[in-house]
Image 1 (cartoon, rainbow, N blue to C red):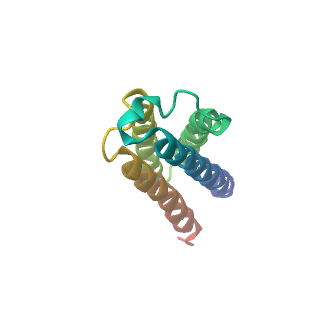
Image 2 (tube, rainbow, N blue to C red; image 1 turned 135 degrees about the horizontal axis):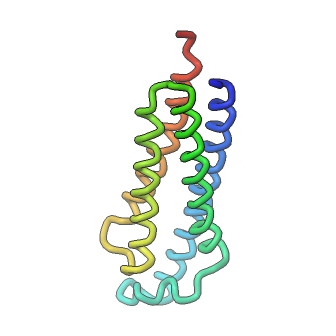
Length: 136
């Protein structure tokens, strides 16, 4: 069962990496909007988002579901679940922060916190992967 968890954990890390790259492209779009519209018109930054925004938003569900599946596998395997529980909690927080950026016009500090948490999720996934590889 550990090998199955490791396999899906690798898949989850790849999905998270893709999600981070998609987020970077969305941030690039926002930077271009800031340049053309100005900081004071942040209500309009996402009036006509590019396709990568919709992909990033929808892809978050795939990231979440893949990690929920890992939670189920961990529970079935009766292994320590502290990492996957924390990962899923952080993903939920990420989704809430991402939605707040869209619906509340980028409240202060949401973008750097969003990026920091996403990198933390990837780091936790990798750390959990290494923990599962230990021979005990």
